[in-house]
Amino acid sequence: MPKFLITASYTEQGVSGLLKEGGSGRREAVQQMTEAAGGSLEAFYFAFGDDDVYCIVDLPDNATAAAIALNVAATGSVSLSTTALLTPEEIDEAAHHRINYRPPG
Image 1: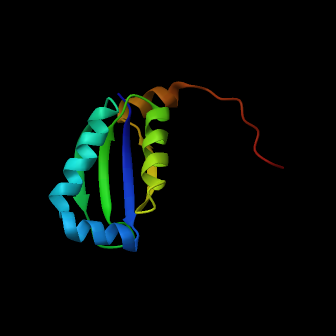
Image 2: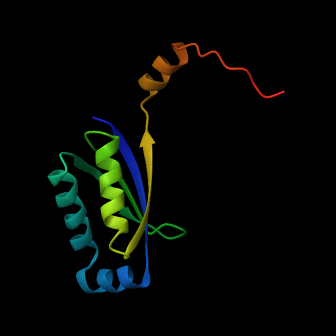
């Protein structure tokens, strides 16, 4: 199952909700959402810095990842960034594919 890194930053509205619900409640909500979408939550961490949350999730496909991003962003409480993660074996496989590419110029 494809793996994704999701980073999230809370808006003021999202921070207010987090203060009311707590961190454990947010993790539980993300886990339930991920499982309902046919995936699983591997890791969930809060952080200092530009992003407030880092999640690693397994999801059935890119469309499911996009659906989660669209629906969460539509709430206005969080902005998300989703990154597809690749295993070393997937990079090994990609390294064996020869692509015909001509650079500019």
